[in-house]
Structure formats: C-alpha cells, structure tokens
Image (cartoon, rainbow, N blue to C red; front, side, top):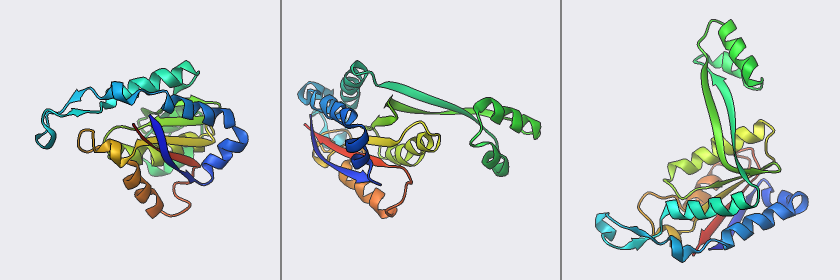
Length: 203
C-alpha cells in the first residue's frame, strides 16, 4: 500500500518531522508494508457490484494492526464519568476519573462510566485507521483525537483513510480522503483544535 497524499492540520506533520521523525517513519513503514493485493478478498453482495472482488476493511485493518503492534504501538483507552447535568460535566471534565465519580455522586446525580479508545498510541502520537463508514471519521477527528489531546495524552493525531480510487473498490458508505478533507477544511483553519495529519492511502 502507498501513501498518495496527506494534509497537515495545525502543523501536525511539521511537529512530527521536528519532534518525532522516527514515529512518522514508522507510520510510513507500516502503510507501505501492507500487501494490498492480499486484502482484496471480499466478494460483494451489493446490487451494483454483485460478485466483484473488493478490498476488505477487516483484512486491511488486520494488516495495519500487525504492523503497528510489531513496532510497539498499542491501543489506548481513557475512562471517565458522565451525567446529564451540563454544569457538572464542565466542572468535572478535567478531574481524574475517581474524583469525577465522587463529585457527580456528591451532587446527587447518577455517574455513568464511559471511555474513549484509539487504535494505536506511541510516545504521545495517536493513529486511527479508518476503513469504515463515513460517520466514524468525524467522531475520530472531533471526539477521539480531541479528547486525547485535551487530556494531555497525545500531541498529534493521525487519521489514515482510503483515497477515492481505493474506496471505489470497497463496499458502499466507506469514507474517503478527498471527501473528508473537504469536510475538515470547511470547518475552518482552527477546527478541530488539535494538530492532525490526515493520510490518504491506495493500493
């Protein structure tokens, strides 16, 4: 698999190149190490592509997982407590989880355990591999990467997406780089307020 292009949001790539060049090199290594032809295993059942052999998101994710885990990148989860009271959420948002729960209970509210999870994290850089439905990309960019950045877990978030040329050979509804780049730029130069690198890949 190859990197076709990328977009650096809030100098995300520049930060990596200066402060974490080895991690950027590892990301490139993992992507280029994926045998795309071995991931073209899904027989389509959709009307428009019935019987055609498509690229499998499961196979591509598994190949990426093998590559990143082999270089010491690991999944990361951050747990927190939520409630229905907006004022209480604002008050507890930056507290440790145990303190959040105590504060919510102390206010007579019911605490609900929740968490954010990201695919791979290493040395304050997070990577999300997104070969799924288009709605998941906005969640990655505006919730996952943002939450880990605000929580001081990461300095940069990486989002790996298929280019349109790859997405056209996948099941319907999958996000693609060009469309998500448009959505990101439409939000304005400072939104979301987290340094990102959006990477477009193809066979």
